[in-house]
Each structure stands twice: as structure tokens, then as C-alpha cells.
Image (cartoon, rainbow, N blue to C red; front, top):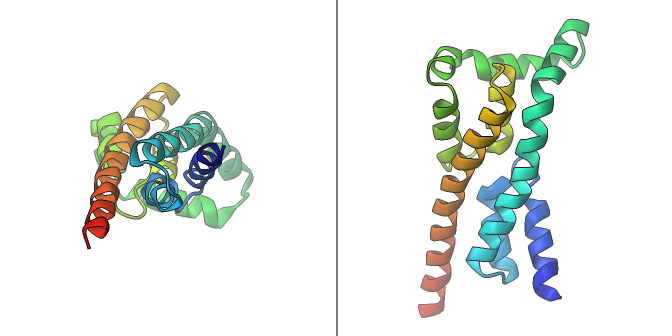
Length: 155
């Protein structure tokens, strides 16, 4: 029962915008989950977010922009998509995949899904590119997390 609870906490942590897979995997390992279980829980949780954002982002963006709602948020969306719009439209899902796969702060499932949605990629492309990028990013974090755990056990 304790493992299920840890799995659920890791799953939920990965849905938080700033935490995502990059924070949820080390969190799950710190809770005592095996790194493989933490990886799966984090991917599943962030996958739920990707599916939701893939279908809602473009509609929400257009709705708010047309009516003048959430001007600061829409401005932020325009800013992050405007800088790289040409590259993203040229390379499409591959650009989103690479963006999400790099495990640095600010390049996770939320931002990748929002960028892809604002430039109006198809939901299937968004889900596939963001989820695959997230798998790579999560794998890097899982390897780092397991290495840190093993290093601490030898000391």
C-alpha cells in the first residue's frame, strides 16, 4: 500500500507546471520508489497534462486573444512562441520534441505543449512530440537519479 501512495504522489507531482518529470522523478526516488517506478509515475502524470493541453491550448489562446482576456498570460504566450516561431513551424513536431527532451528548467511538458498549441500543431502531433521528448528528458533524469542514489550508498 505504501508503494501505491508513493506512486500516486509522484504521479501528482509530475502534473505541477514547474516540477513535471524533471522534479517528480527525483521526488519519487526520495520517497523511496524504485527509479523505474518513479519514471513511469512521472511519465503518466505528465502525459495526462499533455493530452489535456494538446486539445485545449489553441482554443483557449484564441478565445482569450479575441476577447482581450488574460492579457499578461497571452503576452507571455506570444513572447515564447514569437522568438522561435519560424524554427518551430519549419521543423514542426521535431522542434517540440527536441525542446522538451532537453532537461533544463522551462523546457517541459507545459511549455512545450503550450508552444505547440499556440502555433496550432495538431493535437496528435503535440501529444506524440511532447510525450516522446518527455520520455527522453525523464530517462536522463532517471539515470541521474539512480546514479546519485548509488553514489550515496557507497559513501
